[in-house]
Length: 84
Image (cartoon, rainbow, N blue to C red):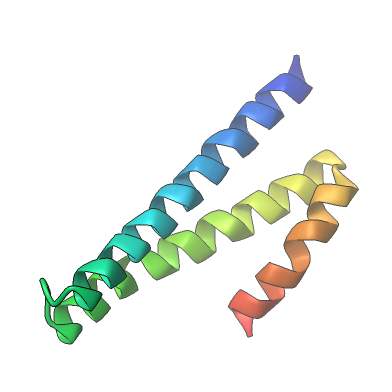
């Protein structure tokens, strides 16, 4: 039962990351079609960057704690890129 709850937690966190990325792409599309100025677009994108990094860090940490080593190894390069 615990493994199922872990995968549900992973799924919810990944959906949250995907939603944040889609929001960023929508902001960039609005910028491309000149619906929004660059300052407002940057402010909107910057408001979701830190929650995205935190969510990804928690996801990687949960992978490490629960013993899903392959998933953890797949997450670590992107986490390193975000921290750097």
